[in-house]
Image (cartoon, rainbow, N blue to C red):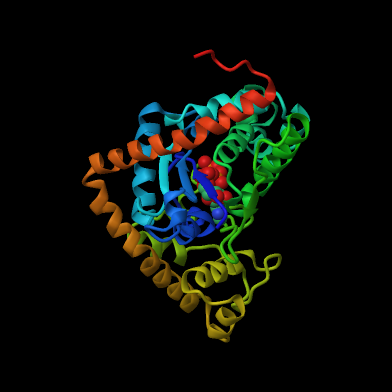
Length: 343
Ligand code: AQP
């Protein structure tokens, strides 16, 4: 099994898009407990708190979101005996390798990153002027996250495609210039749920930090809230439950969500609701999503009652991650010509 690495940003609460696009697959890719792969840490997951500082942030909220997201990941099924879980800022090698790779990445390739363009352009020319250097540079930090663990596969949602491509490009460039140093990673995507769209604005992806609370289903939303959000989701003026992303983006998004949580294909969902009204369809989607999220929701509240246990788990994770990352950082530093510290 190839080593898998992925991360999630503590910019708010985990939503259905994060869960279907990434986290559910992280849980599924964990090797069996006691296997050689588990001992060699073949599945590594990270709460990438340094990435949450690229837009203005509140320190107290960042601390709280970091622990909450780690708790969510454990509640979702990340198992200490099968995978490694840690917080990015606890392993200093991430920031250090970023500097080295900053000097290999080009200004032009970072300028072309669509997330930077979208997030900085939100406030026009003034937004671009005041965007942090961190927002511009965070794709390189993400490249370091991946390369530090010799990860071959990166399970992500579709919005991260371009960033993992950058990791490939930079690994290849570094290896070409300084000799074989990094494993060249590739992104993997789920068959359904790779891009869950906002329920109120089905032309844009569901997001933690977008101001669209009615369009975002949080994993911790109570059942009544989920029901209300799905029943008031934007659809089109027709009445047919048919998948067509261009002509019927709202209905198509709900079809994909229903398929992702029930395991049905798009064609099967269309057949199930053939000739049925939107109202009935939305009620079925709401019920399926509530049932799908119920176990994680319940487990989260059990775990949240014992934060010391989560902190213990994160301490163990940070030690193990550091032990993996340090030799890779040393390898890269040596290849780049930095004088090793005399001992
Ligand atoms: N709408 C989505 N559909 C499918 N997958 C998604 N992911 C994010 N949104 C969707 C995937 O979730 C993982 C963790 O994402 P992240 O927290 O690192 O950052 P993001 O991609 O920028 O997610 P958000 O929720 O939109 O955060 P903000 O609003 O802070 O930028 C990734 O694998 C991502 O692809």
